[in-house]
Length: 374
Image 1: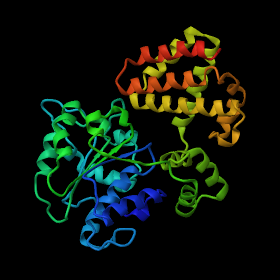
Image 2: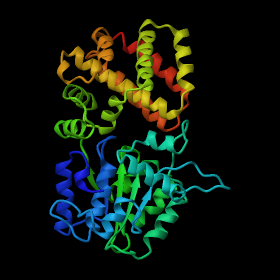
Image 3: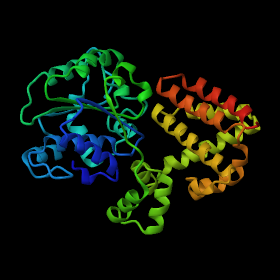
Image 4: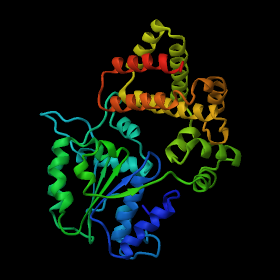
C-alpha cells in the first residue's frame, strides 16, 4: 500500500516520511484514532515506505520487489497480529490460522472495523481476542533475522483486545526489540491498553479525514453527485467507514434509529413493562450489535444537544433523524446532556467488558427515566 492510496492525512504522512529521511524511526509506535481514519492503512504504507528499494520523495516506488510483496501483504518481513476466535485447549488459535482471510479482507478494504472483521470470523455474538499463546509466536518470529528487507515489521491491530498475559510477555521485547525490528500498534481505544505498553510507545494521533479529501474520494472514486457527496461528508464527520455506511445505508441503521426512538419515548413516559420488553429485545442481539447501537445512541444524544443549542450547522443527521430530533431535542439540554452521554458511553464500555446484558440495559433505561426529565 502506498501513501497516495490513503484518503487525506497529509500531515501524518509527511510526519512519517520525515522520520525515515531523518533516520529517526522509533522502534515502537502506536497509531491512535477512531474508526475509519486510515490508521491501519497508514501503518502498512509506512512499513512499505521504510523498506522500499527505491524510495521516492513522498512515497514508496510501488514497483520494486519489496513494494510488490507489500502490495499483496505477502512480504516475509511483514507480520500481523489481530483478534481471532477464543482458543480452546484442544484447538489453539493464533493469527496465523487466519492469514489468508486477513490478507483478503485488508486488500478488499483497508479501512477495517472490528465489527466487519468479527463478521468475517463468524463471531456474530462474540468479540475476538489476541490470545495468550500469540505472544510466543510474536517473540519467535521477531528473533529470526530479516529475510529480505532492512527491517522486520510487526503490526498489531487492536492491541486492546490482547490477553493480559500476552501483553505482559511482550513488554520486554517491545521495550528492547531485536535489531532492525519495528512494532506498529493500531488502536481504537488506548484506555484499554496496559499503561506499561503505552509508556513504551511513541504515540501517533490520527485525526478524522478532512472534508475536502473525503469529498474528493466520494466524487472522484465512487462517482457520487456533488449534493449527495456533500451530505455524506457532513454525516461521516471524518470517518471513511461512516461515509461508506451512509452510502450503503441499510436495514441495521434503520433498526438502530427505531430502537433509539423507542427507548427515549418509553423512558420519558416511564412505561416500565414496555421497557422490559425493549430490554429483552436488546439482550437477544450479539454484543457487537449492542455496542454499535450504543455508539449510535451516543451520537444521537450529541446531535440533539447541538440542535437544542440552535447549532444546526454542526449537526450530523439524516432527514429521518432530523424530523424526529426537531421535537425530541428539547429534552436534551444543559441539565442532562452530559449525564446522558456519559451513561451511554459507560454502557458501551461495560458491554465491551462483557457485562450482563439485561442488567446493563435495564439500568440504563432506569437512569434515562430520571435524566430525560431534568
